[in-house]
Length: 443
Image (cartoon, rainbow, N blue to C red):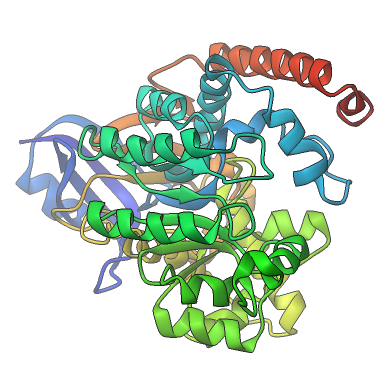
């Protein structure tokens, strides 16, 4: 007997043996994958409380968004054509957050992520307690860290440092869907002294560090001044502080050189590539070259939860345009980056990232019924080159169905959207009262 039995699926396991089952089935018991095999084999072996006929569907591991700020979904659409929108729009607006609105916004962001097939978000933001409340309520998994900034940003100071550390202590092993991490903002907004202290705490607590790195020339210039203790670059500064390493999720790495790439590769540091953000901002990161240098590169969406399927496709397009190589970032590599590679980078490779016996049951079903998903020469390629987020039919997280036939099961999507709109309206009102110059940018 099992709880859920998925049958007649095209199963892309992403497991160590890289199995693909053309008529596959998956048995789920509790929050674990009980068995994977042919439909005939699994249906003969198990009775199920609930059966899902996945004919004309692809089953893949749940997508892991390696860097996002889900609550930013209500402001990330603003100022897309403005340079330096982080400093001109986002930071000024973020000063106006209140916990209640951050929770409402995070609900909408988490819903967007789930509906597009993301089962785990690696989130870095203020008021993380409210975001954790939203993610657990909707049933999405989260590697979550409260943003820590020494200066410059909207929420700074020792109280934020303490909250970032206390968040880890409060949530560590508290909830099956939450893996807390430390989230210093960036080398130009977090002092070297704090970064050294956070490295020690990460080692003591055995948690990941998730931070932006080399994301702007403003950051590079500040680190090259007295702030950076003589460091050549932000990457060099983190190397001197012993922050680089396999437990660091370093986001962006846009402004780096050959020496920086060598340091990232030698230390086993993980880098997150967010192609749509860079393309819309008129910049790029050479992710293909990073991979060639031996760096593990993951995929993230940055300032909004967005469509990870579309983000993988954007990664392929931007890197091929940049390198002139039509095989850069192949479809199998991209699917790995968003599943098993991400899981391993997060230290969760034994739990997530593939459809294998004994792993946590985080997986999605993608419909192949619409014209753009046909013909089916290679369904794995179809996922990257043809699928849309709206093709996601079913999402299972921790053995629970959280999206069924394209709809949320735990909350009503209309109510979630209404709360998100309400939070956006109230945030904009407060922000423009604090800083009237924002009115011309947000209207």
